[in-house]
Image 1 (cartoon, rainbow, N blue to C red):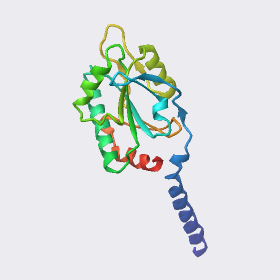
Image 2 (tube, rainbow, N blue to C red):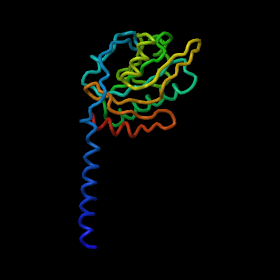
Image 3 (cartoon, one colour):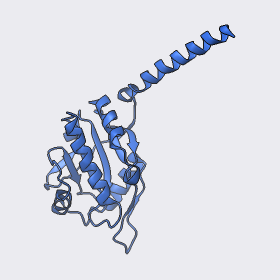
Image 4 (cartoon, one colour):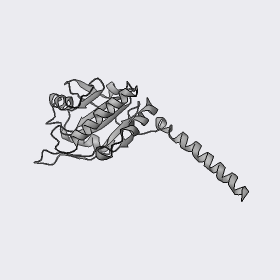
Length: 193
């Protein structure tokens, strides 16, 4: 029986070491490149990947006339921005893509977001593309289904938040809405910062 304890103890120690190593692998994780884009921000100015080069960022998908989940997702992005700042993560950026670009003008996005006390120096709300473009970007890069049905003002979209590393690769996603856990995102942001 004694000879079984040593291998079990050794196995336990090796497992703990490998778990510790896994927590740090996020910074080495390869992900889906977002690719180059150049859209329009809430100030009506061009904004794209060149502005996010070498920065860690979190993104989500929202629209201003949403009658269901978007206000909650926008509030959660605001809370995440505040928590990141409180943790000293100064160079993390936040990007909300409008999934209703024909309705969501820069002014409308800025007015909408203003209710959530954003810091617009690091939070960018984007529009300035076609409906087809945002649906393709969401599906091809973020694996997020986005669809605006004909004769309906409500756009169908997911509720995830996405973590993008300094190389512009999507390396993790997190649930928004009722399952939102900002601490998990903050923990991962610290590994990448």
